[in-house]
Image 1 (cartoon, one colour):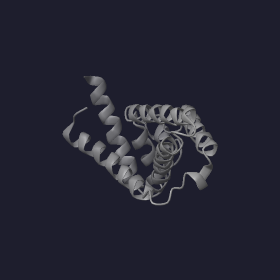
Image 2 (cartoon, one colour):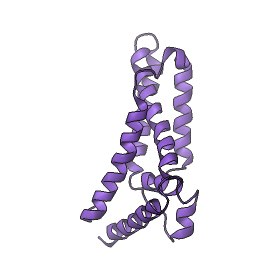
Image 3 (spheres, helix red, strand yellow):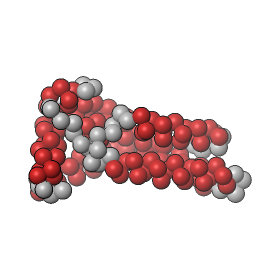
Image 4 (cartoon, one colour):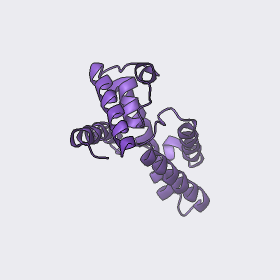
Length: 163
């Protein structure tokens, strides 16, 4: 029980860091310099250190990657079922990573960038942007919504003091 309360105290510090510089953030590795602990939340860590601009860019990379993997799986299902299965497998892996990132500080993790690189290779193998265009996906709205939504969930959890 005390570990949950400790985590909420750290999240509270992270929200304070974010509020102190919401646009630009406190800087890369600034969380560790200001607090003895890490955020234990990749989304809050990114928002606090990089500000809303950096958080939006980070979230945009994730959103675009998930959209492209979904489109690849659908586009090549009949012509290249192996590539479609790889797209689904990497999408599930990335989704699991992002789910657990809510309770871990994995914002700049090598595993995240390996999954993003594998996703890029799958998209290129499927024909790149010409075959898998992003037009009409509204990825900007999704990324902004997820930024605001994740920070809202953290804020509500802090206000209610529930884990």
